Length: 60
Length: 453
Image (cartoon, rainbow over all chains, first blue to last red; front, side, top):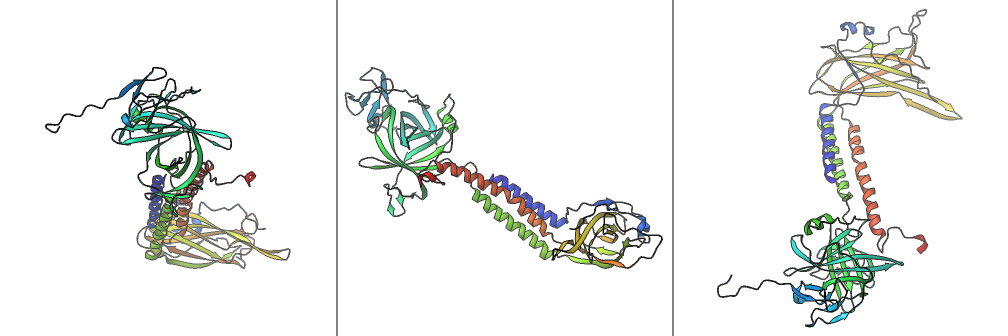
């Protein structure tokens, strides 16, 4: 058990180091190639996949 | 061989016949044998007497077959040993008899050794070379000291009881007889058990070490199956290991994780690469905005996009796209905010947050811009453009977008701690449960019975 924990711990530390060094993230994202080049002049020419929100959080 | 000296005669096993039943008997330990008990008729004979006079005679009602036969030879911990005697001893605690077996082993050059067996748990026992010491010097056995030290080995008192011999066969180096009584005291420090045996005129100390049945069976090359170990023996090593080692390593890993994170915080500090404020108008036809270009330099790193808003009693969904100005590849993600405030029953309440942040991982160096497309509303549906009244209307809220590169994520440090933590906790609980079962059988149970109070 101690040996397993050692390997487990050092593995996690390696992951932590890698996450900091390479800037890993948990963000749920989509990579979209070939965005229309006129997006700067016409922001509406490209719509994010996240658009059209249907949920209402409400409040109390 | 030394010239001129006669070779030593080979060691012989002396044979005789039982004085009572005539069965053949062998004396294996030579002149050291004091008593021989016939395995057939249980007659005890004086081995020191030239005529092997009968000391006592009685028929033991139940015959016990030793698991290691008398005369069996085997190697244990590097010592070649022969089993020469077998006895069973019993203690009575609260009206219940607890019986264990003891095997006397002999090597003419090493002397005597013992093997004890209780509920399938075995200990290899040697006589002590030195006298253990108690907290105040001499060991007190009446009442017994709570802890003793033997050559640097600290042992805790486990149990004291009066043991009686209930069965014996073979040869012994003292005058053993049935119902012979001794007070025994056991002190443990797994895998060791330090035992003191009190007789009328002396206290004998011995040190036992836990051995597995497999080691014994392999050493003696026994064909039979060893009895299964039941329960927890006083000196049985905790198979779950020492949870203190896990806790020590947990502390070490936590410290290293902290140092790694601190290193990146200090030597790779986050930098703001872009900031801009926008206004949100409910009736604006095209609410999406595009920022100016900004540069991200250096190694691939994370990029944190923070949104702070003046949102009030509504929600907003920011559909974000981090677009590479050179390749026109976009990373799409969403950021949600909602903020509500009210007064209910005279008490003010708030819910949600006006701010949000998202971290995009592994962003390569290059020129980027952001496309921010907000959706917002007060009910289920977002605000929609009214073509009948194309004016954007008043500002509903403002929001500021800030972009940082190389933001040290302390969340990862806490995640590492969170993932490392359960194992030592579980191990501690299981290990404590094992120790609890061990000490429940002792004179010092961890939980006292309330009926005894």
